[in-house]
Figure 1 (cartoon, rainbow, N blue to C red):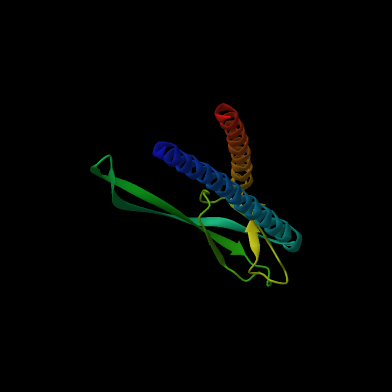
Figure 2 (tube, rainbow, N blue to C red):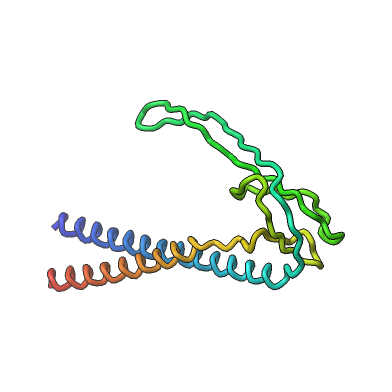
Length: 167
């Protein structure tokens, strides 16, 4: 008798945990899809507003290497972290007054860069038609949405089988 009560409580708890996992996956999916919509709207706004163009040339690339330590598989291991900073010299047109743009995008010295900027707000610009869209956010969001749907379907099938097994 006590085992049946304990089993019933355990069964109810596992169902609650499953529901919480399903809800968490759907919330995370909704968050990622919302961020991707915001990113898409932001990039559209940049494309619409940044109508003026100036040109630049990659003048200097700085590569910083930093030695760091981490523990992996119980052993202390040394690794190198590399950061790359690209400096672009800009041919200003009087409105866009930044003489140098610093970016972390990978380029080569001497590369020509197209800089589209907003004439009303020259601090808003993008390089080489790259408005900063996050392509991986909607893909991960859709993947998590499909995982959530699969989890819901499996939960409902499992619950139906459990109910028909005990009654």
